[in-house]
Length: 99
Image (tube, rainbow, N blue to C red; front, top):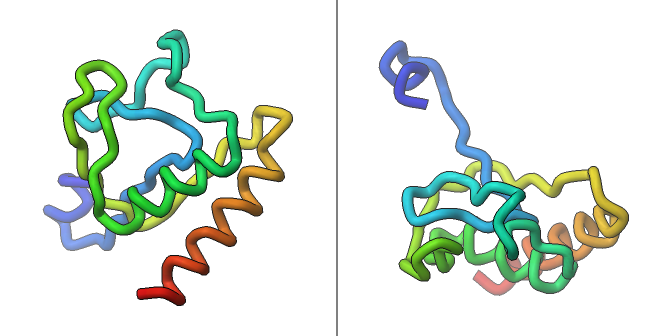
């Protein structure tokens, strides 16, 4: 992001609805318990917090982490991916409508 911005290129920050973060703002490794969010409702709530600029709890320390979110991703490599994507989309649309 910094390199793109330094050259004047537009940049976008992506966050992940179905993944937990560490205190330094990086994704928690999949090897850590709780790093992958499987529940569609939990992923939707996580996505809304991230997209709204509200803090999420770091998996490693419990500290508040705020990330820039220009794009929200849901990984498609798990059985609940379609249900999660639908729920995340619906929650984000609802959040925008209420704003």
